[in-house]
Amino acid sequence: MTKSGNIDKAFRLAREQYEALGVHVDAALERMRKVAISVHCWQGDDVSGFEGDDSALGNGLAVTGNYPGKARTPVELRNDLELAYSLIPGRHRLNLHALYGEFHRPTDRDEIEVEHFQGWMDWARQQHIKLDFNPSFFSHPKASEGFTLAHADSGIRNFWIDHGIACRKIAAAMGAAQQNPCINNFWVPDGYKDTPANRKAPRERLAESLDAIFAEDLPTAQVKDAVECKLFGIGSESYVVGSHEFYLGYAISRNKMLCLDAGHFHPTEVVSDKISSVLMYVPELLLHVSRGVRWDSDHVVTYNDELQAIMQEVVRGDYLERVHIGLDFFDASINRVAAWAIGTRNALRALLAALLEPTDKLQQLERDGDLTARLALLEEQKALPLGAVWNYYCESQGAPVGVEWLDRVREYERSILSHRLDSSEVFRGAKRPINAIAQ
Image 1 (cartoon, one colour):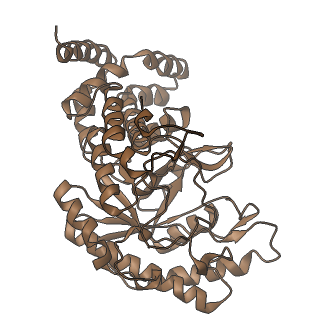
Image 2 (cartoon, one colour):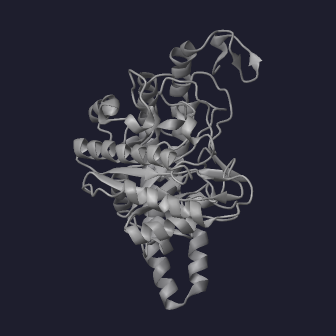
Image 3 (cartoon, one colour):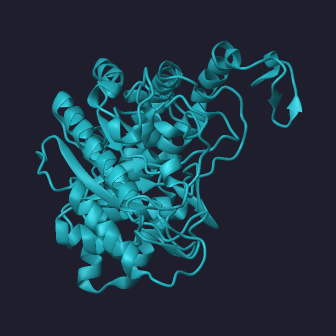
């Protein structure tokens, strides 16, 4: 029997086992095909962007690792993304930051326009990819003091307000061009390393700045604004102006989307438990699926308990129409395209697992008060053959099955990425000839 025949046979057997518990596998796969995860562009170049200067990362951002072959131009980044998308089942979105525009002359953040992203829009149309967007309130001289929209200096605040307004117009143009709303997410890293004497004033300034940015009503068919909360970060360990409570209140009072990042909370705090609470009061939710390790370190998404819990909450609450799933991690210690593939495939696999739960039966047992059967069924369904359904889904979407995708990445390393660096460049901590990459 051919490999494809084995995949199909395993799938048919798995479907029988799932359907014995009341799970409609074909319906689950149909829902999967409609899910578009927003893949983050900044994994491909370590959040460097293309502004044409040597500004170092800052304001709570740090990328570790020196794996060779990172994208240096928009064309290289788009080529890398095309490979990554080919390794991921389904059709997905791209999440751009403002510093990824194509700037042919010096352009400050308050001067960016739609034309700087026309190349991305043209490429996205050709690739049948929808775009999302983010203002970039970091890695800039006017962010060097750790404050932007909450800065005490009105001149600096106004500069960043103008940046936010410009980004909304760009996002709206993207949404209009793709005839699908562009999610425009605001993350502002403002905060203090040590204990502040006044927590109130910066938050008042941040709220006023955001109100100024959002003053113009833009069509929701073109752009949907989200605000992203955070507990702490590098350089803001003691106080972040835009805390969870701040942005939850802001989103509710201004009817905005809230963004929950899985790495933005205390190491023992999870976002999966927040989803049902937040969606009682805000219209929609944006998720930045990440993996914090001890702090907001944005590790590559793995198939861990919290990832599964996040997807379970989205499915069990029937929130797929109100939750936008995006990714946010950056790891320069491994092949960057492989990181995209690993993280996105894991997010999708966890979503498929949630869709294959006997949710109706579990919730009926809970309503009946049969908590014994609920626990028994929750545990027994963990042994069902998810892998067989996942492999079938990948094959049906034209994506590699199993670790086949890794061979494509290794070949891409040899033929493309290896030519982006000098043969004497340090590789994994030691000087190695370029032809040793990925062998």
